[in-house]
Image 1 (cartoon, rainbow, N blue to C red):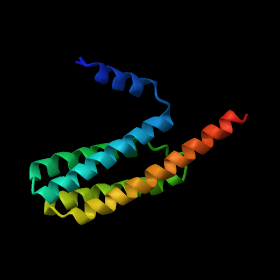
Image 2: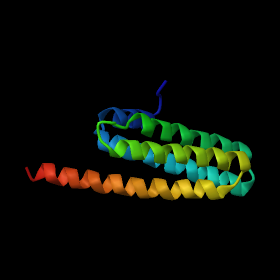
Image 3: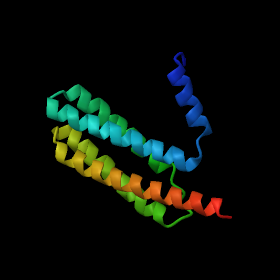
Image 4: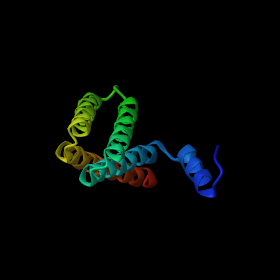
Length: 128
């Protein structure tokens, strides 16, 4: 049940955002969860590590589910996402931050690429 104004705002934002914005929101969530998982490893807080790395995996599964396989790049992205999930499982099982840091770097790069593509697409639409 949504009770706070902040939660209502977030819910409204989620329901009214264009697909490109939703994609960026997913990346933001995955990035936040991976960072918190890395922080948990550094602190020796394995519950925090497990919780957040599992949340990051769930977000990456959502990114995979959002792929449109009508485009050839979707297969490549699917393989990248699968690798990221594998690395997050590895980081979580071994409590090793290196695989999680690798995933974080990929997520940051992909988020930047999607953000740039989204801005380019919006600029082209505005010029029509």
